[in-house]
Structure formats: structure tokens, C-alpha cells
Length: 120
Image (cartoon, rainbow, N blue to C red; front, side, top):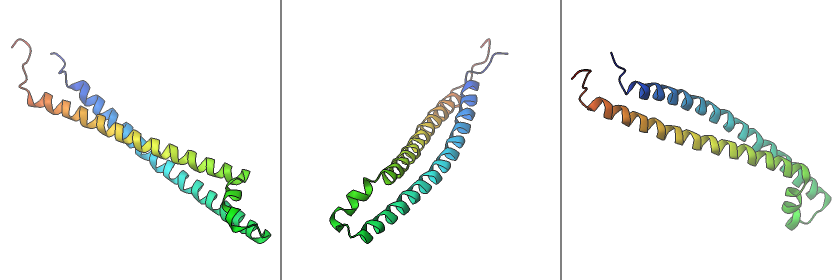
């Protein structure tokens, strides 16, 4: 008995669905990391702004001065990096969903064709 050509499609679909589940988990972790990095950055920035206000630094330059602080800039870098990972994970999910739809459509086409067995 020959192997039905669509069996590989089913295996690919199962693999894609597993990959998609893993990427959704990765997105959840990336989202949590992004939220933590955002909180760390905002807290440190707020503290730095209060310090500068207490020193009497002119309000017009506090924002630029604080964002240029090495610690604040490093926290913003970490936040921005976490955001990039989060967005990349979202895009990976979209690509995997598209691939799932493509393979599913291929399977649907295979099933809608009349099957011609061996020797027919």
C-alpha cells in the first residue's frame, strides 16, 4: 500500500501547531520581561527626576539630563531590548499562523480531490 501524499502535510501541521504553542509561551515570558523592564526604568527615572528637582536643577533641562544619566540610559536600553524581543515574538506568531493556514488549506485541497488508489 502506498503512502498518501497528504500525510506529510498532517505531520507538518502538528509540528507547526506545537511551534505556535511554544511561541505563545515565549510571548508571555517576553511580555512579563518587558513589563518588568518598563517598571524598573520608570521608577529609576522618577527617582532621578526628584533628585534633580531637589538640587534645584531647572525644570526645562531635567528630562534630558535624567535620560542622559548612565544608569537611566542602561535601564532604557534594557527596556527597549525587551520590547524588541516582544515584538519579534509577536511577528513570529503571525508567520507561524500564516504557515498553519497555508498547510491547512493544502490539506483541505487534498481531501477535496477524489482519491485514486494504486492500480486505478
